[in-house]
Amino acid sequence: MSERTLPPGATIGILGGGQLGRMTALAAASLGYRCHIYCQSADEPAAQVAAQKTVATFDDAKAIDRFAASVDVATLEFENVPITTLERIRGAAPVYPAPAVQAVAQNRLKEKTFANSLGIATAPFRAVTSADELRAAIAEIGTPSVLKTTRMGYDGKGQVSIKADTDPEVAWAESGSSLATEGGILEGFIDFSCEVSVIVARGTGGETSAFIPVENRHTNHILDETIAPANISAETANTANDIAIRLTEGLDVVGLLAIEMFVTSNGNVLVNEVAPRPHNSGHWTMDACRTSQFEQLVRAISGLPLGDPSRRCDAVMKNLIGNDVEDWPKHLADPAAKLHLYGKSETRPGRKMGHINFLGKPTNS
Image 1 (cartoon, rainbow, N blue to C red):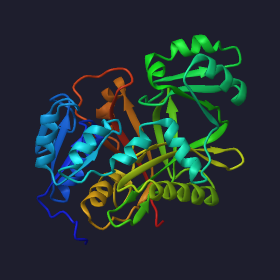
Image 2: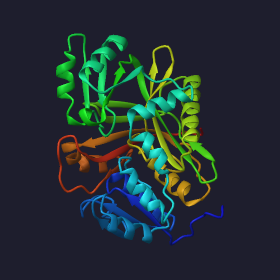
Image 3: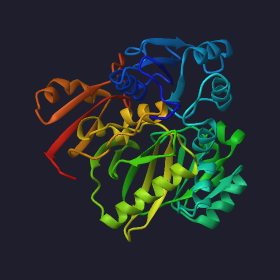
């Protein structure tokens, strides 16, 4: 234990009210902590299970100050909280991961530039601020490639595919107003054999603990399944773990960092994106690991010893997207399935409503 260890009964503030906050709050409760959720609508998943909630916008200074005064430490369940808000909270309570980490994670250009500064490879990329710059970047990087917003965007949002016959003027216009104000990034297409991710926990004393690399499979740009462990060589797995830990330490993360990576056909590992929070590809850890990603987050930001991340069995995590959630009775009847529903009252196409962890045979690894 460190001098900064939070005792049971302390309050953890969570910025964001989605399912990641919900599962973090449940993990915190099992360790004796209370959670205060800051969210923008009253019936968000995390608010349903927390001891306290504040419903306000992220630019409401008075609400932010009240929230900050009520918590012993604050963390995030999504990375796009304004940096000014995080800095304001940090005046009253520690914020993990720190605002400087969020500033990198919120910007795809900074994200990839930082990885390259550590000698970590990414897809080729160029910053673009106009249709003319996009044209020049396409000539340099080639096609196929992808034009992305530098900020925001997830599950395929904020992206335009660039092909050999794409008109840069049209692509720039289609990409939306955010590119005109903040610029964008053109990324070269990677012909990868699979996408993997590694989630690393790092405590207040600098200790790290990584979950095994897992394979992610997407449908319509949304994560569909995560397979644990990833079907990659031991050498590639070690490379992915090394990259993840180097990024976590380089960013000075306290909390969690999820790193998505491409594995090419010749075994090279390229960083795609990072997320300084719990991650959809880590949901399998809730039932298949000795310590879940959510408990690790709570331990890391509270000054507790990090838990054992080793897996008790192999697993496949399946997202329930939109109307998939209607099959919940079938999954409850499956003894190999562990069902997790998020308490969302409205079902919409593309909305993550829950997930199932299908558990395999026990392993000694």
